[in-house]
Length: 150
Image (cartoon, rainbow, N blue to C red; front, side, top):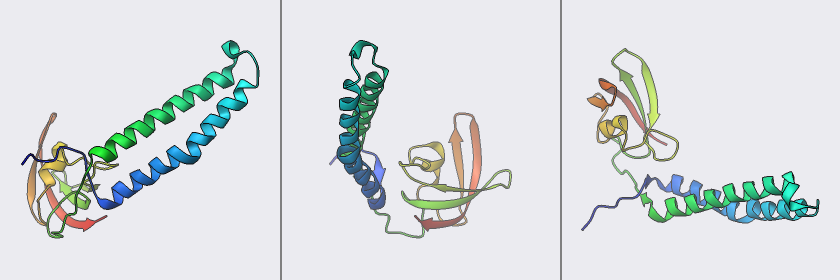
């Protein structure tokens, strides 16, 4: 059986994207249609800045709706049952090679992607482990200090 290839989301992240989609498809779409209607009433459409701006906003809104629909349709919902190791949805505190502490969330939504050099190095790591992060600008080591769930 083939491995799922979609974006990895926790249930909470999927719910947040779904809520955004509902908002975009409902009230925001209605507001965009109303803005176009009002702008049309201003006269000649060829020189009507408000009309062109409203149409542009509608285009951006529809593009965002399509993107959200695609992400939700192709996303893989993951639940990381093992609290002892890093998985999607984990918030990880690391100590880098310079002794600097960083806190990162392993997430396809607003965090460090699990497919990125840091994300893939941290997946499966446990507290106390040192991982090798191989990035385009060179390799570095990170020690896992703590792991918690979002």
